[in-house]
Image (cartoon, rainbow, N blue to C red; front, side):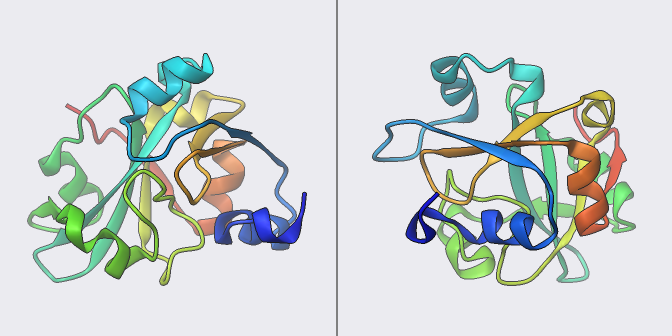
Length: 158
């Protein structure tokens, strides 16, 4: 793959020697994860979205959940030891993460935030996450990802 096509997420995975494949799709603007998974023929339960939240303490966190599910804010807060968390505003995504909406991924951000992955991923051999830009998905081992960013697996959905 040409260097100019690599995202920060891909460079991170290359540096950590984590195997992955990419899947690209035509997309000029944000579309939700369910639509993306359906367009690519990916199982919804194997396609995860990245949500960024801010805790009462002011710390930021990433939560990876299946695209068809909703984050349970109380469970998410408990998983990171916060009293409460709330999702960051869409307008703040790029400033906080370095990624745009629809291209946000838990790896290669400006700062590595504590990350929690929904527990169903721990049982998957491979799953899909954003590749770091709109129109790109990365398929990799959830356990390899968790090990590389020190993420945990918990029940964080409604």
